[in-house]
Image 1 (spheres, rainbow, N blue to C red):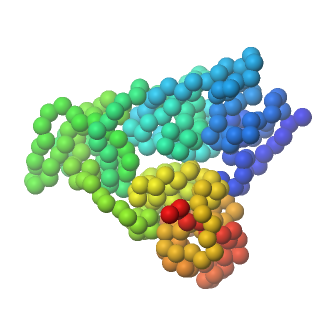
Image 2 (cartoon, one colour; image 1 turned 45 degrees about the vertical axis):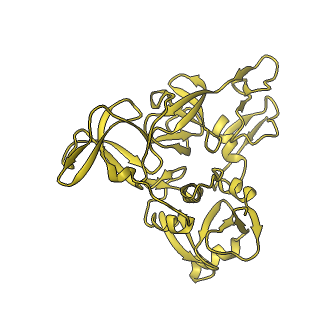
Image 3 (cartoon, helix red, strand yellow; image 1 turned 90 degrees about the horizontal axis):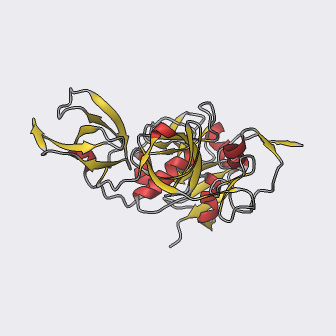
Length: 312
């Protein structure tokens, strides 16, 4: 007997997690463990599992690694499989297993599992630099007209490169080593410390950023990617998906700025008692909408499940 799973919204059910491991059809070979399969590596088809593994199964032990660029985590080892999350350039990974040209990995900051191409995974490292700009580029030489060699984003990790800083037309350039080992140059402004105390203000800085299912950066992100990124900017670690975030926060009846609003398969960040900033798959961009206002706002309010607040 086969169980066919259909998923319409990310984070609304265990379907995303099941698809991550088995594709759209799951052969019933072994019961899944009670742990969340988006976070706990257990694959009956391949007979792989984290400890404790059943007898006769391969027990998986994570090895530290890194993402060599902005890397899609996919639901299955297939380039056509759904992107379920994203690893940022230089971000730490845990490598669990390999299959052909693919590696099964976890992003340690939120424990999320997915498949990436092996060529996108590098050895573990200890980068000294963190990109704070929402979007940025690395260059082959220390000048703005030089060849762009990499796309970067907030949270990307780099190492200091060989050589000295260069000042060019009042611009300060830092030599860096990219996560894939390539030498490059970035302007120091993209590494400048940015103090963020309000997740709502940070989320508003991403207005107009494109909606991308599974995305986690200003180059493209989904609803829970936006809220996770906004909270991370304030030093608070949210889980990856909307339902996980809902379970992690304290329920409140009356929202205030910075609270999250939850809907079936969707999450937004409240600006006040009614307005919400969210990565909007209808507008295909980060937008601000008012609960109960207009046709779209009315549909949002009708489907509202409640509000969550970071524990104080």
